[in-house]
Length: 504
Image (spheres, rainbow, N blue to C red):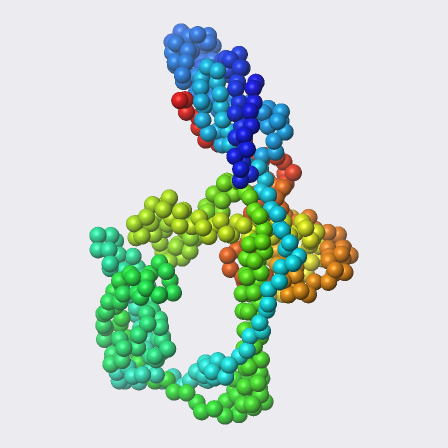
């Protein structure tokens, strides 16, 4: 068996294998035997017909095609052992270039390569946010609104009222298609004010003057700068029925009102604690934004290569996420594609740049884990479980059973590991990492938890949004079988190759 390898770059190798004819004939005889057991041939019991008779009955090409998949699996395994290749994922059988001799070409994905560069020299200034007086006043007004006196009135809607509405909205800019429902809500209270932007901006002008049991309709074109990019430029029709009109009056500010709003001594105490609360929220948001910038800066300073199969998996994960979000809006992915007049390939092309960036972040973080020797202890996992249990006391037993499963604990460990990794990069970027802390990292007392990594790359899957102040939560990216066989060269339970061969 002759074998040639060619480096295709981006962690992929082309494997060309020439298979001896006697090996092909042996494979064809085995295939004919399998087919003979499934085929009725006059004069012979199933599986008892001679090879030549089966060939005459089914044709040599049919038998050859039947033999090809098993033969490809066998020669591929032998070839990667002979040339000492360590596949990262399933190989692809690209083509069968000839029949005599039989030559097959495979694309073999290898483990990603990440060079972090001088990531320890990464520096990024952090600016502490300041709370402006305007923000404080807006916050206080929201608190005062929570104490508003709301009473049913027998008159038309006026500014500052609360209108109880049935709202229905549909897209109408593509009449040749079924009109997708944007909103269909019953009995929704809506404050009649300039600040009300739901379900569309300028909502107030459509409500003033309505009386109970009256209905109104209007069309609306979403502006080019609308927050939801998918809705920009789209035209919709809304129908609104007013069920009730209620007056909405705010109490005057006083020390008594401050005490009614919570554990405050007086109005001055309320203002002070409100400013502190806003400051804490702003710090949390600023830290989250800073974490994203630090991770992106670390990616920018790294050299990252990966096989195309990883990008495909990332794109497919994003498509599945989109499908789930559409289902929450009572739409399917196919509905969305019809509305947008796109094919699935068009959508994949649009998603690819974001998927590529997300994959790079994931691979970079995985490499930092190895470079910094970061680990998660069993004690840390236990603490996270206890924290979760304390938030759901009524479901303690059920959640405890879930968290006792080894795979779930590894998922928690993976999340904590990602949190630690980003924290480490933040300390580096702010110039706050002490060498002594680095040496002692991951050597705390307690049994160490095996961290979840993807094959040899240490890949951590990063979600696109920072969920908390300085953390990016992750999801488990491995199947149960792969977790148990994390050292295997080929994922368990799957074929070692994919794709079909075609003869030139």
